[in-house]
Image (tube, rainbow, N blue to C red; front, side):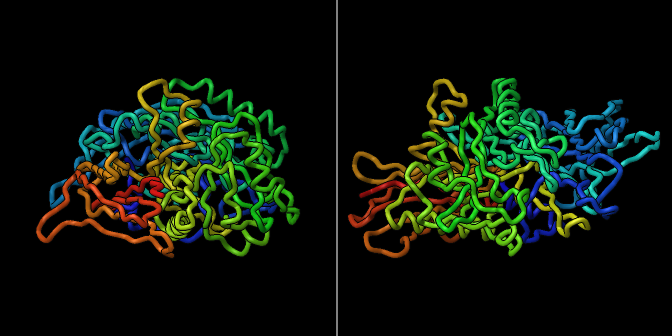
Length: 527
């Protein structure tokens, strides 16, 4: 299981600006201006690998190309330098591999898959890929990892796990919030469902949800300035998903822009829908005609009983997002019947996560039991997120929103598991949200609450288990931290039994490991 806090520690040279996350950065759109420092007469060329790889799985290497229809190229070779850095003064193990492959790229979007040849040894590996190609004038070109100006050369990082997941087999985990190549606009684009499925398999995931922006279905992926039939584009996505192999499961969904109680645009994940649900309010296509097309209750009604999660409910945003895109946050009045849960874990555990979790907890204290949800909001983004730092001028990169780094697990039993079963399970009764450890909290027949936490050496020993109780009439939860005694450790597995107070209305738990992997479980209703 991926743990983004550790990945950030492994990459201290990357800055982490407080800007909206985008995805694979679009660098060719320049608002009809004659020139931009970001613009190159080349397709975007990106080497990408999963951030983690499960034991025994090969590590795929992807070459993603965008706008090769405008700037055709012939890929000549990929030269890979893979290094595992041992602890102490030991020399790093180095693996070098050259993939000679002459491939002509001349379509709006390509992805090519290769085997990186990552060794089976657990640990952290640094990956650099030199891309060599010939442009349409016959000139030889090269780039390290990507040809993005300023940030393309940054090394990729892979953690090879040595142990399987501690989560039981009858719970299935996946990324609740992912964007495919059908999210495509003047500033970003995503990855193909097939590429995401291959990456998910390498990472040991069971499923992922394809939740492209509702407004992106109204514009052509080939030319984002051209409108198209959103229903036809939606059908094309569903057809592409239907042609994928059996697993991991790619669940069709949509990130619907809809109106909160103040008439501002917020986002809601609808999971399992086949019909397109419109939402152009914050698309930026209608300038200051930016009011929502549907209110939250109307969007829930259009979902027709499918699971719906409030997406990143308390995300921070700048003045431009509020003024130009009329974006806002979710309020208590917006949590309406028909909503399933709140996806407050959206990649990194920074302020947006803390604000969203606090919003969820305040609703619990008011007796509202919404399921917690976790996803990454990845737009491609297997190994790094990129975005426009200064419009038309510069880019940024970080590791906050990597595909599969945060997951939602649901209990599905041992029967058939497909999109239909997954959509049903995402409606409850329980979810586990995290980036690796197992955590369970259930009421026993005696009335006691059984708590079970489990980790692996990849994720670290259990640093603490925190038990939270919501008491009748209290403003905040009562918290009790179970940590190691002096000179001891909690190890990789903890089992507890707790006798709840008669005044307790709900109970929940969280776990954190020594490598900062963490998980939280949906709350138990006690009265």
